[in-house]
Image (cartoon, rainbow, N blue to C red; front, top):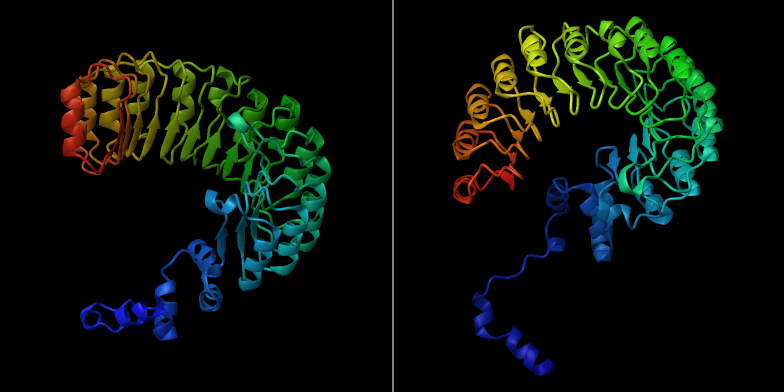
Length: 442
């Protein structure tokens, strides 16, 4: 067999066959240049291939940008303390680390990295099982002077994973991490009212905070916390909490520069909050609020900066609301509008939006059952920059509207026409063949 292999290797036909390129035969400068275009995650996975590859990857890793995100599922499922330590031996200048959901990482692994990488300013340890108050206490001491962003949130959805952090850990962060500008404590349901108030009153540089799904905070505690928020606050996510009218009043009075606000599913907010004004607001989410037309119009039109994103899903608004909003300048710069589940709106309201928001790139009309192909055709003509359109459940939309959206919106990337029974099989087939680059859900 060996003789046969040797005779085959030396056969004349082989002389004319193209030779296989071996990376190790290339100049090291060329190899490193080529590897600089490869994602660091892929480099790390290729490292065990050979001794030569390990050395080359190590050299390539030494010049990789210091932003590391380990949340890709293929990495997250295998990552443990040993691999994390090996990685950070190669990347001592790391400034950002996201190990959210890496449940093979322990408290000891996190602390080892924090102590090794003295420049980490952004840390995300969301849904890391063994992270605890002790972890936060060590982080607050070792990373106090440099940490600017911290995410300790829990998970949500089917596999809800409430965070295990308590008031003890939050107090440690509040006491020592004075340079924090961003913090996410969503789903941290073991933090009490006092912990929340101390956190926001102590962190004077805070610009972004998320307390979503922290259902344990009382209305009075949230109102008190909003009264002492730093005036520099720009982004607030308080969805599905006990935010009420007093808190909204405090927020509007304290944070006039607020740019992003999420108060979705805050059931205690009433029409009284409609008098609040947020002149700098660019992004507003208020899904499921018990507001009527006047309240929504008042909040939306209070933004003199002009909203970029608006989500009023499952709010009982009518065409009159959309007409009144469209008559202001609030929507002239709007990029994203989510009207999912707004079952009272018709073509009249949708056409008014199309005329007032020519820069739209995302429109969601899912389950807007009274919307027909007429308004969709006008949307296609007036909003040519659309990239994402959701029409699922709109049974009155026909083939003509479908063709208009696909032909006139040249930048379209995503189209959802599930449960649109007014669209024929022929229409679906024509669009699928004519626009193969568009992701069509049907």
